[in-house]
Image (tube, rainbow, N blue to C red; front, side):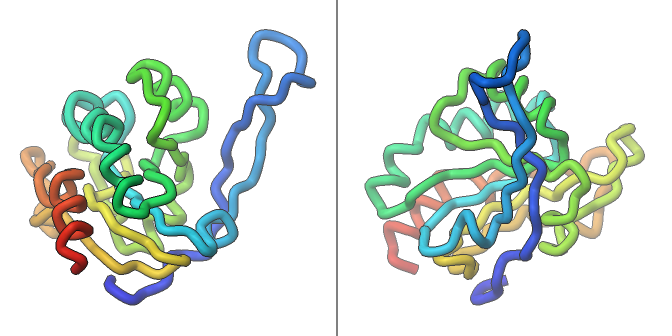
Length: 177
């Protein structure tokens, strides 16, 4: 994955808009990822699903906690992308109390599929979801890649977490690798 361009896809996001009346003042907004990340250095991590144990209790909170460390190393933003819709991602972010890590809905799995990370998790009732990974992207090009082992063994117990942890990404950035 190193030196590869990220996929040129558009994600369906929701943004707050005070001109929208009612209890849900949000509107749809397309986000072309290449346009959004052009000229920026970002960390993107992906996980199987919002509200799931490891994603909610460990991975997302750790990236949120270590966000200032990423900024100190020249990272503009940290994004979590998951094969969930915008409504689920919004509620998950509220539930976790996130205010630094930005959540990206890949509801149809287009970004994840183009990254080669879309897996079938029907055995646990999820359908197609993302394999757990992280990357550093400089101006739309992957410069660092962190993938959990076992992508070809997606049985009931296959959901490792460690290689894509924020501490590993920070260590690589600190090393200048």
